[in-house]
Length: 381
Ligand SMILES: *Cc1c(COP(=O)(O)O)cnc(C)c1O
Image (cartoon, rainbow, N blue to C red):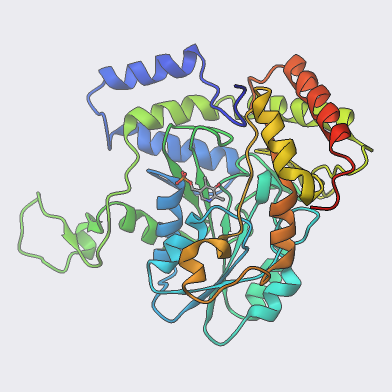
């Protein structure tokens, strides 16, 4: 089965990890800072690395002081971690529907969802395509809200020439194997706000204060460290930072390969009746994490199953968050966010990863076109 996504690991990556394994530090050694500096060099934004994209979101919400009764506005079309980590602070999850063109949260609907209790707007760069960051930034500034960007899909994408994460108060990345670069498990938070980033760092490292000038317990020896606010252990080990540094050094080549696959799919599938291809806004240079096509909802299940049957490991991203029983129990219902629902019910993610051969892309396109032809009359259930 050709998977929908997978890591690209080469001999350099392996050598880097082996070197880390032979070093003095398996975790919390020099490679952490080196990986963070490399991310800053690549994105232009200071970074803290953590153990997953979920941890990164948890840290971001912690840094803005999210608390019970606060509201965060999020898109339904995302992985549930976007919401779960905010719900853990007792925040109320508010949804704003998406724009069908990109799958990203619709700023107009965000503006309408703001109340006195709103603390943050959370945008997700669906499939790697940057959200409407400038418009969201303006709305956030007008209402004194935080803008958080779940950039789990979009490492390496730029919006108006700036790397994703540049206009949000905090942005989070995931380095899960299917994502644009990987550390196995891993993630990062970037922010130009030094205070917010320091809060992220403390929360991700047990809240341990190590700077003597900040100590409140002043009569201890040089071993001393102390906690002012609780934190957790979200550290990324040196072993994985070694992989991250190596992956990052070829992030642009990996992006180029994704782009070639994107362009090949697009040239093969453009203009086909009943098939909607991913859209790219001219102000964005996308590092495509997914290749999300949309078909007739009535035919989606059959096309999906037939592709799988033929060895093409397609995926669906995502069932709208408000359809999860955890949100049903809070009163959300099918029909509440029709555009996310339509997007979901028509979506199929085609295989997309740097080591996918262009021949394979053509073979997938051939099969898809055959299958779509068979089901093209399936408009009625
Ligand atoms: C992958 C992903 C996450 C979570 O990242 P992990 O590293 O798997 O914890 C969060 N949000 C979105 C949109 C994702 O795709």
